[in-house]
Image 1 (cartoon, rainbow over the protein chains, first blue to last red):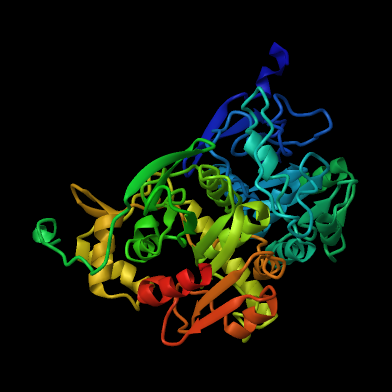
Image 2 (image 1 turned 135 degrees about the horizontal axis):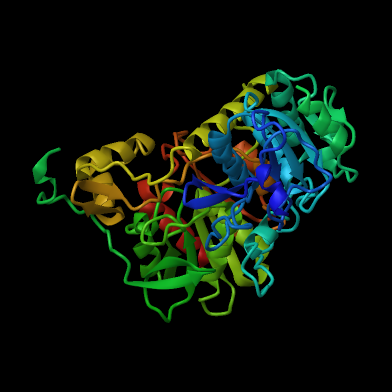
Length: 228
Length: 307
């Protein structure tokens, strides 16, 4: 990032409260048209919002990135207890601040993007579901039960409990399909969901097979939503 | 608010005994308060309370088991009673907390008992650690997939959506949320709406052992950010399928009166899943809180089963 970029770069962080967690929402750029609907980046499991907008992400307006609970600069909770539904609450708290957005989700963020689009169809105008860590989740039904303690990483960020618990998150295909239908029934868009991931775990294959769900590259999907 | 509530003397229900000991267990940074009744050298029983209850709801039932010759070990689950409020709550976290308590007990198989959510928890824990369990008692904590037989698929989907909406609406209200204060009578009356079969005397007693008195009134010692229900992929059959493979003696006790906190399961829903040789008791005229409505009957069933 150079000084000449400063006109388009806004590096401030908005802090959003979700229950006892302070969530970092990074304002990465205003883009060429600051009045355009923002793009919200949802990172993959164990990732964080990148420092700058990745060169592969072309968007005309502002770009924000949310650090999920236990990731990046957001609060690290004590004693675990993560669920995907909690992360949906994270995004909902961010939407309260940001208003209507288009979502670009990587891996876990793609799954969360689907759920929040179902919950807030008026505020989530398009979800781009792309490859990334945490895309698979914990399979379509629970495995043999065990009590899991995280690996003793030297670092506490991302929270080792997040890495552990959110990789065991069960995602039945028909559960995911139900949320696709919520989205398609409520959204004003023709293609409110775009599956761009190459990897297709069972839940995502079920989503991709639903009539009305779009397909393409991440760039094609972003340009489609940018023109709306 | 009546000002004399604090100085009033409330009737102490017959046979109640507060825990003989309290101790703390650190569960991955969440401080849990363990409550014990009975001789510390006696064989231990692990006893899990239900959701939105706390260990001292067992103040009449647990001493009966202790007097039968056991060291009864319960704990306040995270967010409940004397235990710490957590940042996050989940089934997996509750199971890990239970394992942390279990890890403090002598390293030999012992009976697990649980009511409602606690019943499902110990069933899960018995699958996690079959080498630590000698017998399993489930008190009205057996879910079934058949508790909404009259609801169409479309209606179920709509309910799923409503539940998600309500859950997110709840999440938006949580910052600095506090429980509503009140007099002992008011808190008892509020709890009575979810526990309609319990006596006023018992409910008022629970306030005194399960609530704290602030300057503006009493508040339940329950994290106000916890909520019943929620949305997620969980299915009752996932719990039920843990049941047939249990390798230890099992006693299931079910209250046959359907009520608000109960799970709506009927004996016919459960019986196909019982492990070979399991003992199952359906109690006529008893609601979800079988061990509170009929503590002597249920304690005797358990003591006989364990002998």
